[in-house]
Length: 190
Image: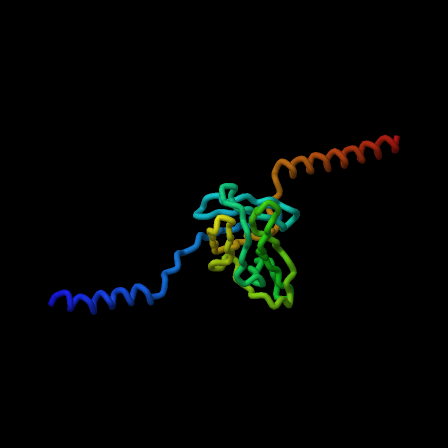
């Protein structure tokens, strides 16, 4: 008699387990931080992750860590999405873009471009510092997949305070030129 009471309960638990939505494991978040037009870092959980190579001013390629399997493909969620650059003005929209980079030998990564003039763009604009969930999925030849969310922080390329040693050097050089010019004048006057 007890078993007949447990059958409906067991059936209900089984149906719930089969039909309930699957919980999606949170993907790792790669945080790209542009410190200047020549410095970009990539971290996961505050620790350096992968490698960043500068291709030119405001242009980088990030590659997966070397311990990852060979990449067979990369999916990008919302490829027209861009992060608003803090130096944008009411008349000029500057943005930062992230696109998949798939290289020879199955090396997978992300191409990062900063300070692009995206005025009039139909892409989806995101605030500086926004985290785009499940942005990139890397498919490996092993059959495994790895999905990353991405956050982009642009600290701005504003004018900084000059280095004191170069400022002092420039001051000394300009004083030497002024004194040299004054001596030449004095010598001509004699």
